[in-house]
Length: 413
Image 1 (cartoon, rainbow, N blue to C red):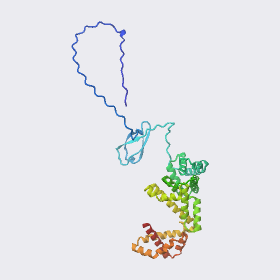
Image 2 (cartoon, rainbow, N blue to C red; image 1 turned 180 degrees about the vertical axis):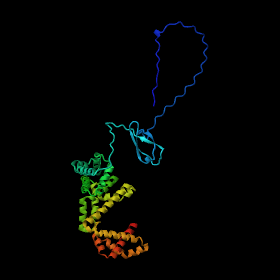
Image 3 (cartoon, one colour; image 1 turned 180 degrees about the horizontal axis):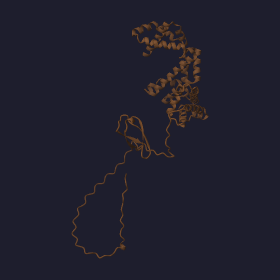
Image 4 (tube, rainbow, N blue to C red; image 1 turned 60 degrees about the vertical axis):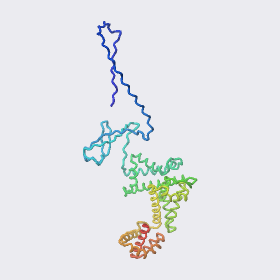
């Protein structure tokens, strides 16, 4: 701490009130010795040059406290210390310390008042009723006229997907729930409350509403002029993946694909591709030009992790939609059907037996049954199941083994 200089001032005697006294006799004044010449004054210091503009700036001043580990049980744990001024400082004790060690902790100097109230700690748990409230209010919010107008606003700063997420999470804020924790709890409610049919129904309605409102808003924003040249931005590619994944999950899309499979007895791959290309134009990109750009993602963006993961999820969702359409169109193709369970068991046994064969034995086995499997693969999914189930147990086992072997060799290549 610095203090100001303390100055003492002596009052001067009033000349008018001073007594007049005779001056005493003065002894003769000895000669004054010649004073030495004063030393030359030091040269003035050069003025500091103005500093050039810095690439950094002062962001704040950090206050620290020094903490001593008084007990081994606190090592690696979160502790709190109350300062003399009443502030509480929370920190993590480093796990590499021991009793008696001292370390420094940064203290944030924050003053809370009416204009800057102290933050309220967010909760990371939700009751069953709070989850139900979140779903009900979210459904009402997404179906409201105000939300629909906002999602379809061409001048909005954010696209419909980002707007929907933000509007959903504002409900967590109102409930004083941590957003990340709230999303996780909402996503696991079906397993956390497996016997609660009402809550699972609300969750399903919430998800279906979000998906439908998202796709409807995108279709309302479809531009009149399609982009046919230039760059396909990364942000737009990710939105395309997200929109396609959402489209594949809509009940209307699921019904459409199932009907296609019932009518043609073939996987609805072509219809899925058409829906994907339609989505490109919904987002404002000419379909064939955009498909060419999607095929160049590796060249244009390199090993962009976000794009690679997005493309993998997009492809997986399309495959899942195709399998689901076949299962919806033919009950025997459902994963839980008797026929499919038997085939899965045969595939597991086939892999075990193939692991014991040498390369030459595998080649001989495949030569024996390879042609039959190639013909089999040209059949429709329902015909494949019926064909396999008509075989004898031994023929069925060998046939599935050959099919698994061909798949493994195909992946290896």
